[in-house]
Length: 288
Ligand code: NDP
Image 1: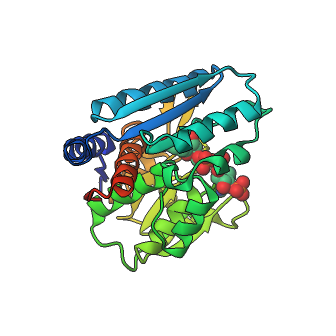
Image 2: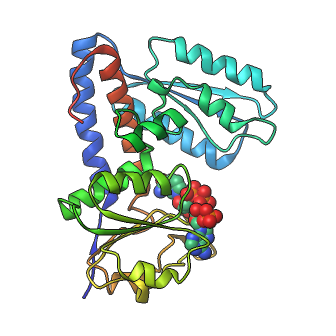
């Protein structure tokens, strides 16, 4: 058997087109563009690339992009003051502070300073709590993108056995919450899980968000399972995921490649969250 390769790049492109169409409707109704503010502290090259592509995608979708670059040695108070300004700015619907921050800055203090109703990254503890209790809020972009791919692939997820490997606040935990919301039977595995291969073997859905190159082996996968590989690992041979792609693709029913799977979904969902925020703030209906 050879798995269906889930084309996240094509799905993300389609999503971005649907968002752009809805942005045009929003502009007609509200008389302004949805706005996303991105804050970059310091010169980390990977972060600079992410911020640049987020800005380009925002503008391409017809939204306003506000980029704020601060020096690596910026004082915590100055960064918090910028967040306060963006919280109060009516043209800003979404605020994103690119992580990681330089070591002298308190990431939690910065994340929690963002107005939860402009927290389009979904990292604020208020939004984590809203997700856990079924209230309307913002869900972190990467796991929300994974669920979109899964529903596109499988339709109704009710009753499926799902294993999420990884329990970070930005991927693993929200991923598990979203699968629970879809009525999956959810197991969260992590570095202390015993006999990980047996845990993975019973899953209809495997989501790998570990950060270890090709750790999940083909033999661990139940025949026909759907495999979502969130991992991005740079190796001597190039970019690879957390799953041994060739091994898993020979057993799975469907699998996301790296690159071209989950990765492109993250920015598309960020645009979606920003549009949803703008719609909520202006009382304009958005087709979520
Ligand atoms: P973290 O490092 O925050 O979390 C990794 C998780 O994996 C932890 O919960 C850890 O367990 C678990 N883990 C580590 N080693 C093992 C092991 N041997 N067996 C089982 N579990 C293990 O990473 P993130 O969640 O931030 O990211 C995960 C991956 O996803 C990374 O490769 C990252 O680059 C990628 N990523 C991709 C994005 C995209 O847009 N495609 C966006 C965000 C992340 P424990 O808690 O016990 O330490």
